[in-house]
Length: 440
Image (cartoon, rainbow, N blue to C red):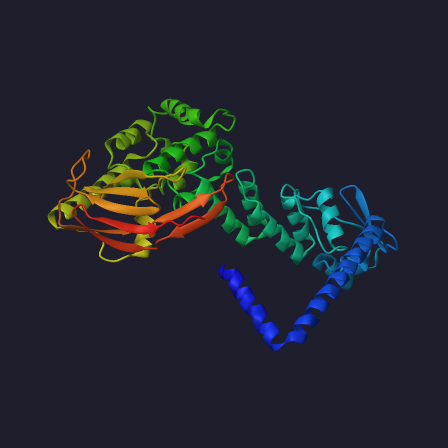
């Protein structure tokens, strides 16, 4: 309604002050449509007659076993050919040019599209063909077509395209496409786990994902470790073929073979994965007995990693108990990004939900409620049963950032909201509403 009102207000101003000009603009719009139609017709004629039929061609381009009868005046739109024809290159006066294609991503179909783009206004780029067309456009230095390829890629990022698009964007310098792919992976790596995607993801990319505080973790940090275990298994066993539910079972069985050797990350097969596992926030895994036992059983993590974490956590617990450490006093963004506890929950439909995240500062039991589109944090001390001790200090401080997002069936982000970085002080059993989730 706001958009309609603003539009009506604008038209009232135009009509009230410049009635004749308003009518004149309408007439121009009609003539413009006719003129654009004529331009489209001319463009179609040029494409058919000059490009497809090759009439009045003054140069022949040969590449990948195919020939194109083209025109220098159109080829000069390409930085590649413009430099060739205007310089002292031997090709500047040649009627037939043999084009060397060093990039394996380029094929004859891509060259057909790229050459044809010089003769027409609109180019239809299929998502399945965009990488080849991008490669050819980069070789021929066609900035407009490169930009169009980038936009096509960003609009079509999915589980099937994200790795290929990321690799192509990295190769051809499309930073905005790389960023879009990483955003998609941060949102979907753990929320929509996929066997084929895990096989495609290399060490460099997944290392960026695991170290990021923007990774949507489902449900707690232990699940990050579990996902990496499955990913590593698939990297070393790419022929594995089975349902996602069977993947962890087979990965655990496979690890039994290495159990009696050195920790897996210390042997030759495991060394390439060390940088990735370094980014697991182990301090939030060893707080849980069952999770700590799984770390010991798997024998993936070197003992010295774990001993340093146990020492770190022991001193943190002593500070909490003996120095009355109530939590962070200010929001240190850098520290938060690096060391915050990552946890999340998937809500498949609207309704009432309640869950708890434990392990917050040794005894901070946090109850989270989602109801009537409100998110509520509650510090549990004595009002709810719990499996371990809870802090009874009068107040505790918590630094947090709450992010809410919804996705379509392909994993594309529909909407997102964030509280930003905040400090929260909770008394015993105090509840606080954090965010209102509006319908979209």
